[in-house]
Image (cartoon, rainbow, N blue to C red; front, side):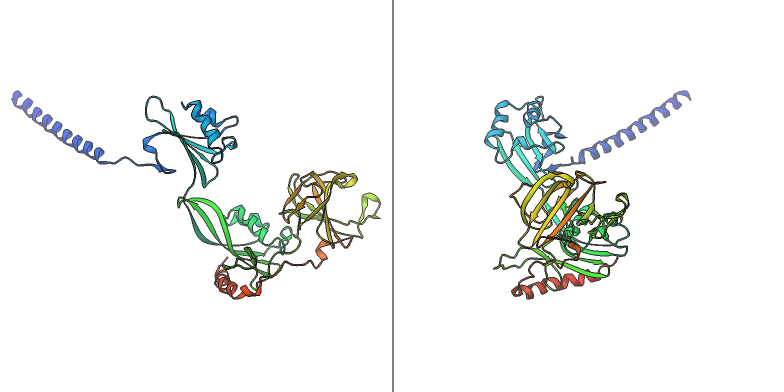
Length: 411
């Protein structure tokens, strides 16, 4: 009886082992059937290399990085000298990512160096055999999108509330810089926008590419903007924003010399200040409060006639725009423009500070018309030239579908 029991147990054990072995064989077969994941980036199959990803650190150099990874000084020198027009190794910036593709052997020597100049453009240094250096771009696609919002406080906060890029606020501020007072928006002001967004490799968002059309309602006034350039241009007309009547949104002067600021003190010839015993102390400028270091912009094209530090003005720049208009920018932390320079509208000419007679950081903006200081907000300033009539039919064909699309966007 005992022998029969032992025999039965042996048979059961043997059968179990056979079952385990069969399962194991099936598992092994399954593992063998799974193909390795092929990783391809920058035009290379990463499976063929030992891949090192890093960013340029303070004190790092192209030569130092490659030298640590077994690349000869001769090849490093060849890249730095022969190919400097394609890739200047001295212009690698701290924080920029790079990739090393190293050989899959005991030496682990770098064979390919890839440096990302920005999110799209990159340089490739191929060190295999003879050295080759070339620049490439990641594939970029453009997707049209729509957005809208109702102002509750500031434009930037409204953008954040609607999960929109802060760059969108900057773009809209640039489009409407001549027509909307962005430091004096009202609750209920609203916007709609049609734009394209860039995507790298079809998946990675790379920011706003272009605003095709926009609508901004400010203080009950509807302002359309359409980004248009004629297809067959014979008058050197560049792409610009026009309203629905083909009028250029640009004006000869910007509304403000700083972006997203507020007026802390207006032009007032009847101002009286308690500190001075309520004596009449006219204020012939408009003060725009902003943080120290905020860029100050030329409000129109012109020639710099003064750039100096003097008395209560502190650091200041004065610009002559034509025979009628001049502007002045006071209390700068530092000046960027020099006397005799021609500056363009929107160009940075200095930075907000507290030099001279000032109780806080701001730029005092002064405006001259025919040699007399006046309030810029009460001037009927000239507009840029409207779109040439020869392009009106083409503009209407371009504009009308976009206008309908804007009108259909909901908040």
